Length: 103
Image 1 (cartoon, rainbow, N blue to C red):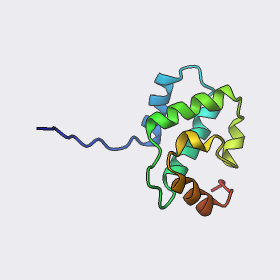
Image 2 (image 1 turned 90 degrees about the vertical axis):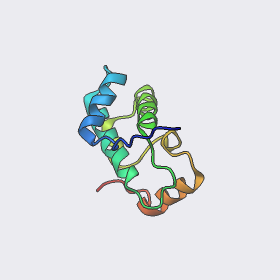
Image 3 (image 1 turned 180 degrees about the vertical axis):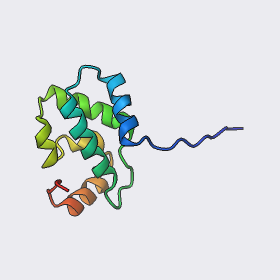
Image 4 (image 1 turned 180 degrees about the horizontal axis):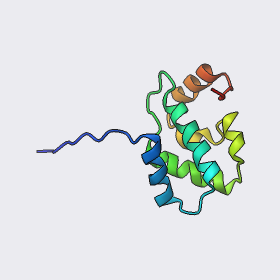
């Protein structure tokens, strides 16, 4: 038999602590803006697979290595392919956001 235990998806505060464990030297502003963008993305309607914690951790590494400025994340989501794995999800995000990420 298989044992299943449901764990709620972490809220932004807990996610910040998770990120700090994986990326201890990450710029605070970049981490904060990335987490905000990540949760906005997760809230997009019609996603077949919402991005997970592991995808956020990978994405943060890409953002840091590419030297993305934190304020860029208020306008767009660079390297979206790191977060979204389904082609349909890319289409859904484009339709929902029309390239505008500012709330």
